[in-house]
Amino acid sequence: MDVARVRRFASALQNKASVDPAHYATNKTISVWCGTYNVNGKKEQPLTLSHWLRQGWDDNHGDWTGTAPALYCISLQEMIDLSAGNVLRDAVLDNTGGDALQKWRVDFETAFKYVQSARRLCFGPTNEFPQLVALEHMVGVGVLVFARPDLLKAHQIRTARIPTGFGGGNLGNKGAVAVSLQLESTSLCVVGAHLAAHRGDVGGRNANYHSIVERDCFRRGLGWSQKEEGSRSVPSYEKNACRDGFGVLDHDVVLWLGDLNYRFQADVPDERVIELVRRKDYASLTRLDQLCDAMNNNKAFSTHDFREHSLNFAPTYKYATNSDKYDFELPQEEQANRKIRCPAWCDRVLWRVAPTTPRSVGEVTESVITKVYERGDARLRASDHRPVHCALSLSIRCVKDRGDAHASSVKVPSAVRGLCLEPTHASLSLTVREVQLVLKNESDAQSNWAFSSLPAWVEAAPASGSLEPGATVSIVIRALEKPELGVNRACVAALNSLLVPVTLRAGPGRDLGAFVAEVGRRWPALVEQPS
Image 1: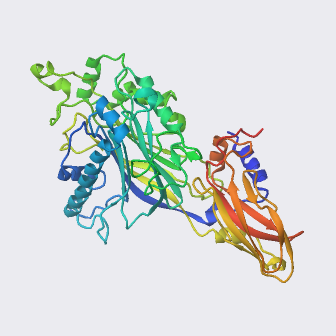
Image 2 (image 1 turned 135 degrees about the vertical axis):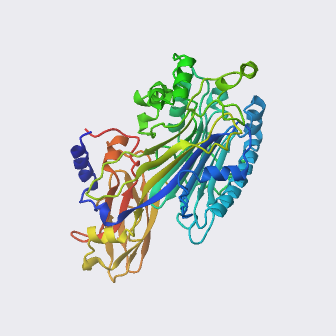
């Protein structure tokens, strides 16, 4: 992409110099723990789970001073048996998978207590356990997000269900559940997925991925704690595309966890895979992995800039339950009574940061660094899968009071100080589609006013008028759903966050600064590229 051309377009779009984001935005680095486990309808004890929750950050060098992550994101699959009866029952009653997830929630909350008892002050001086931020389920797949209250405050929380299973993709035996939330000024989406099974159906898994990311699954204005009218589930959800909604990719950072079911290439003999597993030749196995192949050839995930750390652990499937042995390692008499599967890296953790190009030196953007990517504690072996976890360092944006940015970009002439506008600064974002302003004439004379620099993707109602002394008027500033900008998603990604000083004019040469609208990086996502 011609970044210089994009920036010239940005300058023309804004109609005046941008506010330097570095003047009001800083970054904050938090630790994030992501874990995925296909439990195969089995249960693990809270004490056993606590060993898993300590991995990736508790090195136990004898100093007992490990600090737990700020955010825990956990995805579970096959919490219930995926029989046709259970799938239909959950679709109608919406309680089977939900009941199972609630039991897992209690177990994880108990496990955090075991973590605290093993590692003194690991949750900070206040010793508050991570609190549940959100959870969602769909048949057998569930996702839970916990946050340490002393380090993080999440807001604008929403959940979604995205089925891709039976019935033409309308049933939830396969698919994903997702949580959308805001951390400071960074939007985060956590996806828990269970994709199409069987070694030969790599095309189905790729199609599942595209179906999930292409759906506008989150509804604006409906928070996680609110119950949708007529819905049996709490929290509420959207099974299909929402009107006026947004999707997984409409976030600054996406964490994708789950049993993605990618195997080794179908034309590779099992004996070859087993030989490499025994030799722990993970580099050679990586070259045979279907997901790595899909990403290398832009068939899935890499098409939207997802990344995964290198695979330096043994395949996580398929084990004999309550055993450290793969199926193929069992005695011949036991193998005769079961279906033997070739080992595979089914269980994965990927992440994505919205592609951006900093517009100024030192500008803050999100970033993710993988610290640890490994299999879970060996004591978790009730399932035929093994859990996987990933410890990440996530840099998020923290936006200060935009008043400073406003004051440095728009001067209010003394001649129009009689016009008072509240608030003096505001922000339009993915979920905040409009803001309301109040303009008051505090002078002794009638004043005419009009907006002079509204960008094409914004409308104001009313956009101009006349105010008698002491009169007020309410003004709604609204971001359009499909603005005629001539700019596509990739173009906006390169622009990063546009900062548009919106000016209110009270006469020739008499500008009253209204507010600085910080444009979310995915506003103009549905229109064409500039010529």
